[in-house]
Image (cartoon, rainbow, N blue to C red; front, side, top):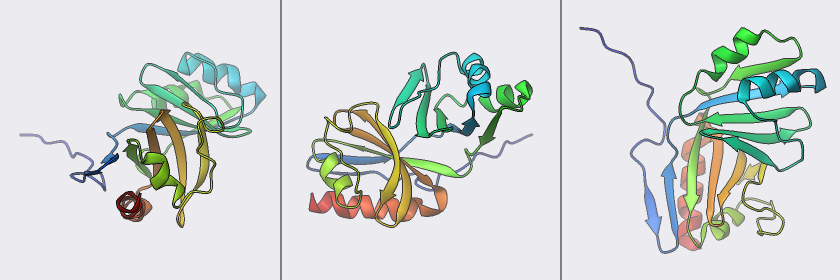
Length: 181
């Protein structure tokens, strides 16, 4: 009899809902921290099947893969289908880009509902108005005292990416903010 170890998420089993807001842990996902300069963009496009977003606070997606612009030469790639992207990037062996699997490091909280923006605003200095931070927008920012990557997935829906080691703090911060919203 063989058994395979399953990774346990730090927020597994938690769910929170109150009037106008719901919090839930995101499904497990493959995450890649991608750094690329001009010469590596074509290789990244070939591997992903679409071009990387090139403007601040933007994202691009195809199927289960979301690619978030984090900086002038940095992207966070999230694949909820647990793809072979890490192997594809490793196989490419391109010296003009760096793709590091950070799936073990990150987790995410999904925040949704009419009061989602209110809860996030309680600890995030980012302007979350739809005009400035529309659906598809993303940003590296802070929530309380924790660095996060904030990704707007719908008019009233956000993905809050954080390090696993800060996930309990982020969850507790958001539940407290939701209760006050």
